[in-house]
Amino acid sequence: MANTPERPASVLAPFAVRSFRFQWPADLATSWSFEMETLILGWYILVTTDSVLLLTLFAALQYGGTLVAPMFGVAGDRKGARAVLSTMRTFYMLQAAALTGFIYFDALGPLPVFVIGAMMGIVRPSDIAIRYSLVGETIPPKQLVGAMGVSRTTTDSARVAGALAGASLVATLGMAPAYIAVTLLYATSALLTLLTARRLQTDAVLSPDLSPRRSSPFRDMTDSFAYVWRTPHLLAAMTLALLVNLCAFPLMGGVLPYVAREVYGTGQAGLGYLAASFAFGALLGSLGLSAYRRSIRPGRMMIIYTFSWYALLLVFAWVDVMAVGIVVLILAGLCQTLALVPLSVMLLRSSDPQMRSRILGLRMLAIYGLPMGLLASGPLIEAFGYTATATAYGVLGVIATAFIAWHWRADVWRADAIANRG
Image (cartoon, rainbow, N blue to C red; front, side):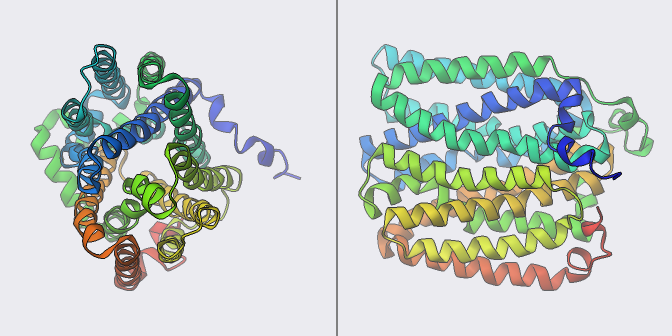
């Protein structure tokens, strides 16, 4: 009887916190804009240049800022996640407005897209880390799993709706109206982020030895590296995050426009369906984690579902029927969420509150594997084809995941390990 009131409240409980009621729609608007931009500009580059190399280069530029992501984490710890996040989202709005201007004055070409894409890529990779840090600052620890799952739905639902909306807006109204919509969404997200709360005062007093006022930003960053290096379960999580960005995401994300056109022979609408399929599976995973948050063992889950994700990548590599590919992408998206959300929950739960933004900033540094994987995949696909390249990436991922599970088995697999505590 005592548990029955919790079940219906488990998904909506984070919305009892006023800050989260503003953060969730702000994150949703940002994520919609991200997905619309990715689809619109990725297809534009492929069509205007007819080069998979330039497509993968453009996709890689979106993650150039992963190298400076730890400094965004330092800024979040020093100034608060709310201040940093609202500034970042104002920057997105200005960049989108600039692209809208290029479109309206008929001055758009690959060069402006690459330049603005590179500038966005400096800031954009840190958005998810800072938004998770803001969740950690404002949500009580007991509600953290549910809040992280609900927060993740903003990204996953946006990948469904944003992909479809981006494709349909360009197809029906043209690129200019589509980019006006993107700019307005960024403006909305910046305003809503300003209405969220500042960090809880308890976070500021738990670890006085780590107070940012006693050290330089560079020292803060080096401290965070040392903290992860001497904490085995955090190091295992960071290594796994680097691996999936290197070997899994590139072949199911960045080169998806190539797969849509060359493997399935479809256009921009078909690309939207493929992107939405992966996101729909991820959304199902987020909703499942939000509703069923008890007895979750993050360490084990991230290993099991990373294996499953790579297995599905190997299947996807050999599928040449779009309907089957959509089903595989849905299952892959589900496994992606069930691997990466528990990983992020573990980082938030087991990290010192004063280190939270820095640790999540380091987590974003792992995304640097994505542009590396993308840049390598372009020449490999041109030389050997998509099937052979995706198969090689999948096999490498399975082997590396097995090594991580074996090497850190005492820290991420044992039921009594810190990584598996509820």
